[in-house]
Structure formats: C-alpha cells, structure tokens
Length: 368
Image (cartoon, rainbow, N blue to C red; front, side):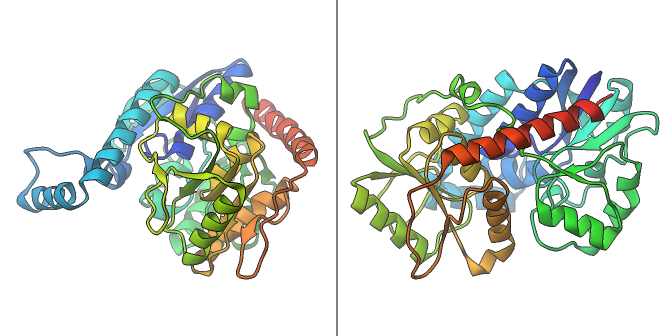
C-alpha cells in the first residue's frame, strides 16, 4: 500500500524527527511504500522556525524582536539556528517527504495515498497542533484506511476542543493505538471510545544497531567520560544539585544538549541528530526532562534520571508511565531520594521485545 504519515516532522526537536523517521522506516520494512506527509499548518513555522529566521519583509516589530535576541542572546541564538539547519539537513537525507500540502489543498493527498497514519508524538495535544483538526485525519476520504499509531495527548486531561474532536473523528478510524496508558483511559472514559491498543513509541521499534548506524560524533570534541543532560523544561535547583553531585561522585564532565545555567557544562545544544544519537551511545548516565531522552537512554542502556517536578505533574505522569510500562523502575529525582544506578537491562530488553512484537503486529493487521 501507499502510506502517508502525518506527524510533527517539522518541529526543531530531536525526538519529533526521530520518531517520524522510525515509524516510516518500520512501515517500509513491512513492504509498503511510505512517505511523511509534508504538511505545513503555519503553526509550527511560527513557533519553531520564524523566531530564528530573519527577512527584510518582516514588520518593524518583528525586526526589533529579532535584533534584540541577536544582540542580547547572540550565542544561544546562533546555536539554535545551527541546530535548525542540521535537523533540516538530516530530514532531507532521511525523511521521504510527500509533495507539500497546506490546509487548503490537503484533501488532494487522497489521490496519492491508500492509507493515512497519524502519530506518533503529541498529535492530539491541541496546544502543540494549534487546534488543527487535520491531526484527526478529517481530510481523509471515507474509502481510505486511516489509523493512529502511538498518538499521544501528552497530559492527564482533555480540553473541550480535544474531547469534541476525539468523539467526532475517532469512530471513523480503521484502527486506533496510543502511546500512554492514561491517554487510552481518557479516550475511553470521557469519549466512550474503546478498543484502543497500547503500542511502543516508534523509536523503540528499531533496534540499537539500527540507531548506531547513523550515530556519528560530527565535530563535537567530547571528554572521555561524561554525563549527558537534556532539559526541555528549565531544571529546578534540586535537579541541578543532583547533576552536580552525581558528576562529582563519578568524576564525570557534564555535557548538555540544552542551555543550562547554574552548572558548569559543555554546551552542545547545536548538535546534529546524528551527534544526538552518538552522545547517548557514549554517555555514562543521562539526566533529562525529555520523553525521548529517556527512550534513547533505554536503547543504549544508560542509567537515567528525570525530574519529579510538581509544577509539571502531567509530564511526570508521562515519564512514570513509560518506566512502569517497560519495567524500568522508579527513576525520578525527589527531595531526600537516592540515585540508583542499577537497572535490570535484561528485564527491560525482554519487555521491549514483547511490546515490539505486539506493536509491529498492530501495524501489520491495520495497514491493509
């Protein structure tokens, strides 16, 4: 079949691009033609790309904001722009894109594909999708196959918009799967939709050796032994202090994939995706507030820790759910808690293999 994936492939985010690559690669290995639907909704361009692009066509206010960032946050701005360019470079090489579509002509994609897959990532989180109903596949013709793979809401509640969309559009799907247990419960309890399968994030469908093939250091000069940090949310003093203590105890240099203050570190926040993977393969431990950081630490068998931040309780639930699902154990950092290095990787690998078989079977029976 000719399959199209609708996801957040344009986000300037390592995990978003890698999950898109992994799902497309997996579907292709099952014998289908597969492309990422090159959809531009305007939202991601405004959020991710517009702030690091400059055009003489911008108005005075836009130019003023750009110049302020350039003057007072120059180093961070330059790194962010390099990261964007490197992610775009990876996408051009590894993501097989369809012709470009916008909201106005998205229905034309029905003439090119037999099956449409939405996911993975937080495609049903309206704050990230910009309240775009396209992510509920409302543009797909009735005679086409449509399904969700590892779709996520990303939080422990539904907005009215999300609830209405899920109730309206999901009954027409051929098959439904989600990434998190609480997402399935929300869809069932609040929308009355049952029969939703739980599946692995696409990045776990590929084996470690497949990720190692595209992991390269690039131009980053790394210390011999290091601890890797990747914080999507600003870390708390407790989290920073835990990083310092762990690094000092184990005589590790701190290397960070995100700008952090209050701790001495090697800033590699402009790393390419290939270098991102290489960093996880080389690190001795990982401290993160990122779902996919936890995933790649797992893939490369690195002890990891995440912040149990009460200000972002829904994010915490997502991390805990992931660790429970794969029988990893508690990896949260809490006041007065201890940092446990030991993870039973044999148990985790067995769990991943079982879940992988289930997830691959879901795709096999759904894409037809």
